[in-house]
Every structure is written in C-alpha cells, then in structure tokens.
Image 1 (cartoon, one colour):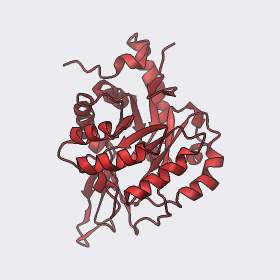
Image 2 (image 1 turned 90 degrees about the horizontal axis):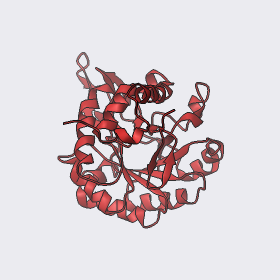
Image 3 (image 1 turned 180 degrees about the horizontal axis):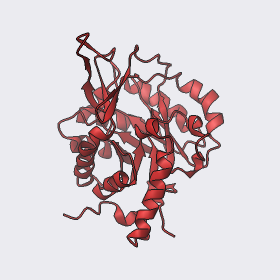
Length: 303
C-alpha cells in the first residue's frame, strides 16, 4: 500500500489528481465512465457573477499536439449554479472546487461571497488568467499589482481554501505567484492556456471567431513544466500543475518539478477515463520505486 493523499492548507485530498475547469463540466457528464469519488477533486466549469453567453462560433479547433479554445466562460451565472447545479453535485465524495472569474474585482468578490456559503464546496480556484474574454480575466493576471489587488479583495471575504490560477502569458510568472502569495492565496495553479491562433490558408481568415484563443494539450507541457519548476523555487505555498498532462508519467514529471497536485484538462476530451488511469499509474510508479508516499516526490527533481 502507498499513500497518495496530499494536503493544501488543511484541505485533504485522497490523491493528487484533479480535473481542470472547462474540461470536465460539472462532473455529471463523466458519471457513466467512472465513480467521480475516486478523484482527488474536480474543478467545475468557470462560473461568473452574471450569466455569460460566451464567444461566437467557431470557438474550438484542433491543432498540432493540442487544441485552441475561445469559449469565453459561457455559463448561467453563480445563482443558477447554486440553485440548480450544486444540489446535484454536492453528493460527490471528493473535493468540489468552483472556478470563478469576473470582469471587475467587485464581480469576483460577490461571486466568492456566494460560494463561501456552500457547505460542500471547500475551495475556489480564482481565475485571473483566462485569455478568452475581453474584460477582466487575464488582465488581472498579467500584472503584479492587479493580481495582488483581486486576490487580496477575495481573500478578505472568502474563508476557505483559495487557489489562484496563473497565466503563462507574462514575462515572469514567479513575480505574479509571489504577488498572490503575499495577498493570501493558499495555493496557485499553473499554467492556464497560452495565447495562440490558427489560420485557414484557403480562406485566408482566422479559424476562431475571436482570432486568438488559448492553446492547451501536449504542445504546452514543456513550457508548463518549466514554469512550475521556476515557481516552486520562488514561493512557499503549494502548486497545482497543469498543462498537457496525458498520462501518469506526465503527472509525475510535474510533481518532481514541484507540484503538490496536478490537473487533467485536454486529455479528458480524448479519453474520459484519463484521470483514473493517471491515479493508477502514479500508484504503480510508487510501488515500483518503493516510495511510500507521494509527498516524497514533490520537488524531487535531481539536478
């Protein structure tokens, strides 16, 4: 037997495998494939204070070793989530984390206050890094001062575990990480998608309606690994690694680079049971290498 459990600011996770926001819906979509309770946690679809229609179609396109998306945080708003979604998913025997975003600091505050009242939601992921909306989102995450300001404002009203999701579309992600750490973040998740684009050579037009979108999948994994490793050396709070994790080996690489936990994103679209395979693979790796607990691997990169 090996111990896969991890801890983030007193919040216990049965294993380090979470599903990334925007790639796993609300969990219900995957119930036919496996027991959601086997996961360390699920981060539900991005939620905003007011309903959002998202961007116009087309807003997703496959690329070499990845995909572009420009969905634009389409959702029915936090009140709808509380009234209609939360009662259905609160039964899951795992950590349910709500990813929240906003166009203003006040939007973030009000959404966080409402989520704070939900008994079976032990954490939020503060999305200050979405590259697919015109106002807010990545604007907050690309500047140390604004990243600090929004994180501190939410920290003042949100009393549970707060994870802040960081943008890779910056000069130095470690400076942003240090800003949100000083503002009261309990953990950071990185990286969000990388700003990119696709062009149709025949029509000579952009493929996405928004021209640019967020690149995810295996193509961004080396960049994500580098940023996790750099950030691990710069802050003291836990890191949740994201970016092109397709199997257990990928996940272990992120943990060695300094991640306490990881998120499965694009892989969910390819194989809906990827997250379960990753959990099983990590378990097998620990047994093979005679490692008793996953905690021994965190930041275990040998230089």
